[in-house]
Length: 474
Image 1 (tube, rainbow, N blue to C red):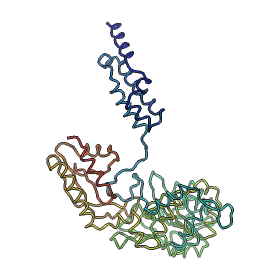
Image 2: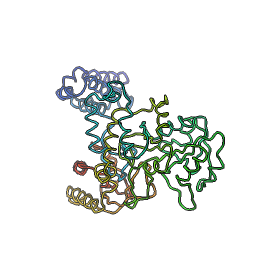
Image 3: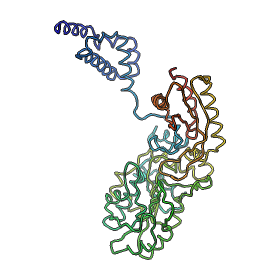
Image 4: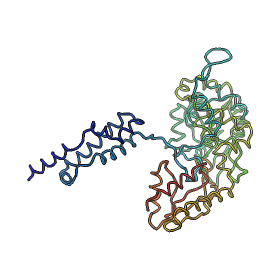
């Protein structure tokens, strides 16, 4: 019996078409016109090997029929599509989180995208001084506009704000003490902590005060022979409320001047405009830090600023020059794409109303509630029309959005969401199906309802959502 079973399995294996035979299939020939041959061949081999393993399985071998060529090609094309797909791809953000770290943070303004295309399609003067006809510095391209907007003496751009903090501390305070309030020793994304960044930079951390209250005398009593600078870290990703106290930046600057020390402020998410007119808590701006007299201030480029990922350092000309000469600057430097997008974004801040209109991050944060309600009502109506209300229950309801990106954590934005429930699909199953759509649609689940916040939907996203719902299996 065992011998007969073995002969039957071997016979079925011999009847499987070869890779060469499958390569002649019409559908495979069509795919070869757009997909590299190696990807197609590897997909066919993996498909055939998977079938062979099932046939040789002690449990399933006799039950496994010999697949037709069409079936094998269908399976291989699925594998091929997965192999040939980009891992980084656009998604529809229906979460309502404007600066969504997992979904790429800030969207670029159209002006920045156009500048990127222009710079990347041709050679550029990235490190070439056109006036002198010799090698130049890549850092001049964003420095002038940063000085103009913020009033800083000098500026330097590196690859993110953690790198900016690291470089400043390594350059200005290596092997020296840096005094920081205990309540400002924050943890940023990816479990990176300010004390860890400081230790890696070579600076020596000196904590003062308590978690909830730090006074000027705490800093003054901690100053010693090894002290190099006083550091203030803006807690942009959390808030302490209740019985709290922190030292105003201006008081730290005056204290530092009396003792011939430096003051550095890490603004974290950073902002170049006042968001308080929108009913949001006031965030300190880079301009205010410069005006207060700090020696250096750092912040991110891809959060509230609304540009590409970058770490921006503003400060005294002599100190920025030291940072530029630090060998670590080369390891932390940005490329032409970052500089092109950042400069184009910063130019929009020359006119604040233009920045609010043209920079997607600011525009979404400031979007009027009535506009959001109308958009939610249109989307809900169109989804309901697809089904006629038979299986899908679609409602518009009030909810809240988040700025995200570690900014303004204690205040949400009022918004309207489209809530979908079904007699046939659970919210979890619907979320999974939409997440597998091309392009993926990312929403959130509350009380077994799938929610889509229209605040973060861009032009064309509603059409994508409607197509996805139209394709849902009955």
